[in-house]
Image (cartoon, rainbow, N blue to C red):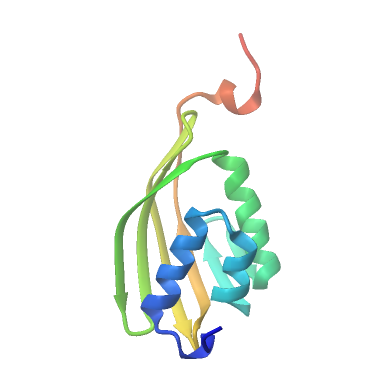
Length: 130
């Protein structure tokens, strides 16, 4: 296996996006995120691999089975930016934006912002009728 510490920001960013699309979450956090990473979101601050797992569970609950689209990817030095969308039918995200700081081949900091656009609240709760 190649030396992970020598990977560029672009390599870490591309690997993260690939593994995320493939649903290989545990492999992604182990390979691409520092054990003491910090993630700032519009839902709070999360730390380390356990914080990443909490965030993933939250996103899966909010947008179950969503299809994600990557709209814009930028990398400059140790920084990266991703603009994204998600859609699961009942809920969509049109304004997803993540930023990343990469050091020594791992993400050490990330910000995440997105707004849920609920189309069908009943589909989320499993209820039908009034």
